[in-house]
Amino acid sequence: PGRYQAKTKELGTNIGAHNTDAPHANDIINKREVAIKIIKDSTSLDPLNIARFQREARASAALRHDNIIEIYDVDEYYGKPYMVMEYVKGESLKELLKKNGIEYITIKGNYQERYEQSKEKVLELIRGV
Image (cartoon, rainbow, N blue to C red):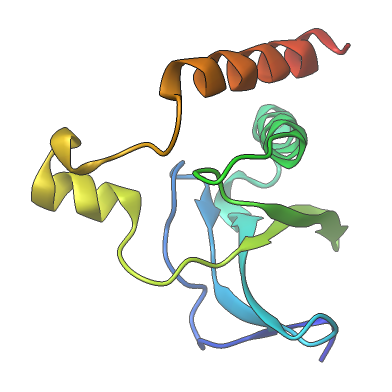
């Protein structure tokens, strides 16, 4: 029980870094499907992994773009940080790239301008601005 109810029995799919899992769940308050990125037990005691995860959460939550997953919530559960994010059905980016190559990816709108805006926001967060 709780706000997020897992839709799968196992911890889900490994996404991105090898230190995290992202099980598929339901947000029962907002009535939507979500992915919950959780730091793995095997790396949850390493302060560097915790700090990296928290930086990623802050940076991700600060970005707004059609091509970037939206972060809904960041918190801890029994001392382990987690992020609740938009759930996107279908294959992962890693799977799509492996199957179709880099040419498969298309970006909406002015890519260069949006890339620069995102890069500046991430740099501000890293500097602690």
